[in-house]
Amino acid sequence: MDLEATAWFWPLAAGLVGLQIGSFLNLLVWRLPQMMQHQWQREFAMVNAQAQTESIPVFNLASPASHCTHCHTPLRVRDLVPVLSFVWLKGRCAHCHAKVSWRYPVVEAVVAGVWAFCAWHSGLSFSALAWAMFVTVLIALALIDADTMLLPDSLTLPLMWAGMLCASLGWIHLSLEQSVWGAALGYGLLWSVQWVFGWITGKQGMGEGDYKLLAALGAWLGWSALPALVLLGSVSGVLFAIYQRVRGHLKAGEPLPFGPHLVLGAGLFKLTLPLNVLA
Image (cartoon, rainbow, N blue to C red; front, side, top):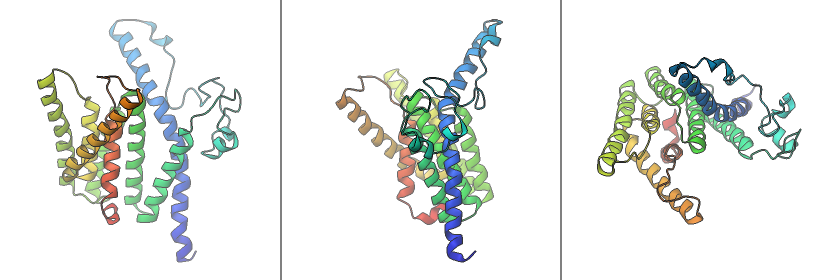
């Protein structure tokens, strides 16, 4: 295989892998909040000495099988091909013909693009894999928070520890010390902002999931990125809130998820840096 063919092979291969991961990401975004709800129901039943926990159905990433959310018909393999199934079926369920959200193929395509870009930039390397996984998990967190106002610990905490691990192995541009300080200060920064806000207003302005998300971002991007991340996320959040109020889709005092705006801030921050920072 000549050099030019090799240069295109790895991004193409990574893009195909990214399509499959994007398909799994759609499943994760849909099911993880429901899995958390099922777990809370089981814990509530156990705490209250109820013996009916067996009546709570098993719900995880494997069970029940993938199905239409409208008619609940199990999907066939040909219904699950990333992007192509959506195009072939014209955005509708093959069984009940209900509309399928455009978000599914968009997420699959975006994740494929992320993986292809990382492979193009860093080649076949642990660095490319690390950054591709980082962005993939951020996309999942942003979508889950936008849908449910939840930032699951099962994603934020592993992402934070993964950042420190990658730093210690030299897979990202930070030292382990910088990564640890980034995580600690990221958590402390939003915790402090929330403490001051709560002391002044007596209200809670954000959830602990936001602290953990910024800690994870700090572990990957370093403590020096934190002011820019918070500023960009805050500006994005304010502009979005104004837009929603103008459209009449947001009532006074109604909470908005901050996670997607932190993720957007992280994306904007990285785009303003030289690409060799990813190496």
